[in-house]
Image (tube, rainbow, N blue to C red; front, side, top):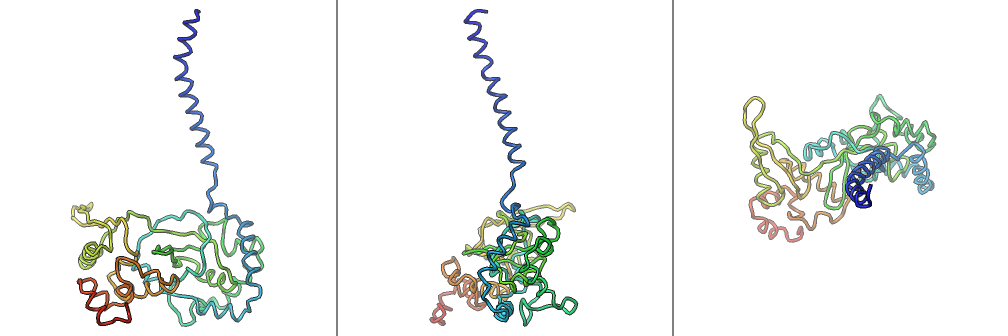
Length: 306
């Protein structure tokens, strides 16, 4: 074979070698990706125990009666208000992750004794959970937080906001209370979130009109789409690209007020610089004036509130 033939063969084989090399690199990367553990899944029993031990060291000197009082006074909101106001979230979580306990405010029902409340059939349960967390043995960590059993984990719904998230409990209210009583600043939980763009179906004509008004007011960035159901009946859905706050979609001014007040308590000043005045979120009358374009009239009548 001549030198020219060698040269020609080398030139023609080079692209093929490059092609197969790229295939090998892709296969190797896919293999690495498949074996890579995402950050939330690194929350093993041992890692959780170590983190909790460090947290507990910071609260060793806090008297138990003060922890109990903090449990009673911890911000609470009826999760039904949050669920009705937000109402849509991912079907699956992304694995265990650390959540700030002071931002967990939604429980199944609002009680006078707050997060210290226990049902008659579960008296003493919160203290038992707190004691297990403080012991911090592997069995205790698994019993409370279930890093090895996803179906039994604390499940939280995240509600985003302008300064940060708040959460309500889907499953594990007593365990959240036990973590609060133990003095934890963070706890591991599965978190379910709302992902944008979001496509939702209004439940009534009144809700449709309310969302249309809020799109017109610039509170929701979205648009309505015509759809036809499997039964041939037409209906509308709303595609939400973004919104001033997720609970803006509620048609209940009471729910909007309560969620806004709870959010502002956790994030002071967070509602001050939005496209809707702060008072129109926390005062139903101010909200009425804002939605009909007469907020300046309300503000003139309430100069100290603005």
